[in-house]
Amino acid sequence: VHNFFLQTQKPGRNPHFHSFHPPNQPPPPRPVTMADEKVSMEVDAEIPEESEEPQDTLLTLADHQYAIQCPLYSDAEKLAAKKSMMDIIEKRAMAPYYEYICSVMGWPKDEPLVKKMQATNEKEVKKLQDALEDAKKNRGET
Image (cartoon, rainbow, N blue to C red; front, side, top):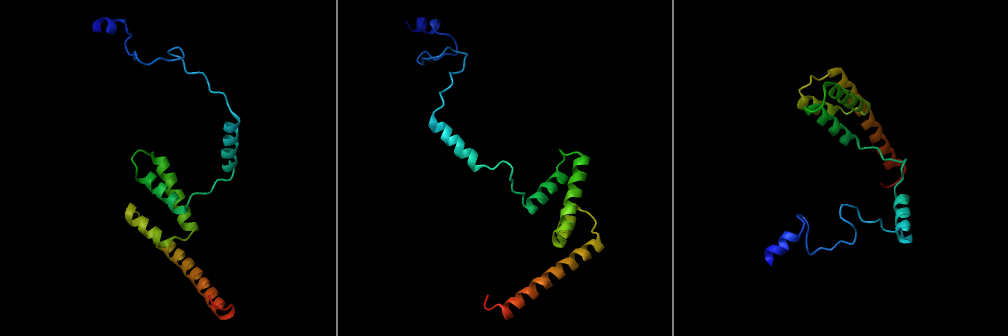
């Protein structure tokens, strides 16, 4: 009896599972309910499509550093990543980061660029210190 049972079963089918739709066809679609529509509307309302928050600068720089170091990227992609990285560093006067990335990547430092970024940073620090002193003297307690 045991051999007869195995011989009558189709290979790859579970004899104890009964399907209510024909095999090799997907099950029929479930009807859409009002609850499904409400959930869909709530999810759509939560995700604004056009207002995307820009990526943090340090994450962008880390992405570029990875692209430059990864052997899977082409020379053109590496060059574009380096140019974009340098644009960000110069725009934000990131002198300490520039010195770090030059040491990590083995790039020669552009000393006039470093001095220019350091001067920009010193001006910004001076402006912030002056604003703090003004606030302490003229605006009361901080």
